[in-house]
Image 1 (tube, protein in one colour):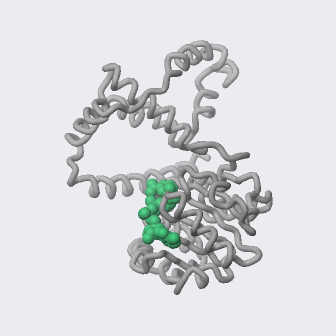
Image 2 (cartoon, rainbow, N blue to C red):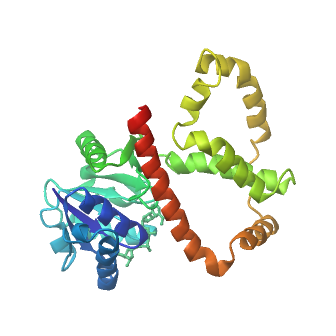
Image 3 (spheres, protein in one colour):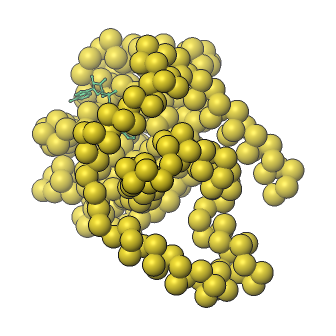
Length: 299
Ligand SMILES: NC(=O)c1ccc[n+]([C@@H]2O[C@H](COP(=O)([O-])OP(=O)(O)OC[C@H]3O[C@@H](n4cnc5c(N)ncnc54)[C@H](O)[C@@H]3O)[C@@H](O)[C@H]2O)c1
């Protein structure tokens, strides 16, 4: 299959690795030719044989020619996406499907009125997609059902883990879940209940251990003898009470943020952040490998 990356900074480069390691030919286009070269160099640094399947396209028309699927990963600025989709609309083949990596814009905000809108949707990755498999597939009202199916099957065949949303919603699923957790994390620190390190420990040494291989529903299903319904009967009223206490959204004020910033910079000084990100990616890669090995053994 011919796959194309349009925009290859942080996320597009990682997509180039996802596509090429699955054995596909990948055309790479970026407004900055240096960024396109850097993406190929990144793929080569991980696996030189994957880089042999990647080519830097001469221009946007060359990148889109005969593409089966395009993953757009241009900057998260609506005017940039709108202009780019207009430009692509005039160049797309009759079968080419386009997924956007956008973290927050609904596809309708940059595809409405385009001739090829039925073949466009959001395919939102979690960075970096070559390590984190989840992809949120979010159709606009004008997206054809065949487009949704195509992108779902492609992502699954690439080794990603697609989930399909029935319609556009702010934050999609992942950032809505993250928003709920972050809102409570900031609240607990602001109210002096515990430190940022302790919130992080509650997740890393507590909830997150189960959540990294089974989600919240699968978790609670095993936390009552007879399953989820019994869990809800036992603890539903408690969670409803907590949800009422959490129902006043708060801004993350400057004093609160600077306190958390000071605490985090003790753990990781500003100049050590790039190395810490590399550490995170190495750690993540080991967890993904371990999960695959454990799944093989335990099912
Ligand atoms: N970084 C993340 O954590 C993350 C996670 C998930 C999704 N995303 C989404 O992925 C997309 C890309 O984010 P990023 O972090 O990789 O950004 P980035 O700034 O690292 O990369 C964007 C690239 O697009 C190029 N570009 C700019 N205008 C262009 C155009 N008109 N045509 C082609 N290329 C163009 C830039 O030269 C740059 O290389 C955004 O929509 C973002 O919301 C980012």
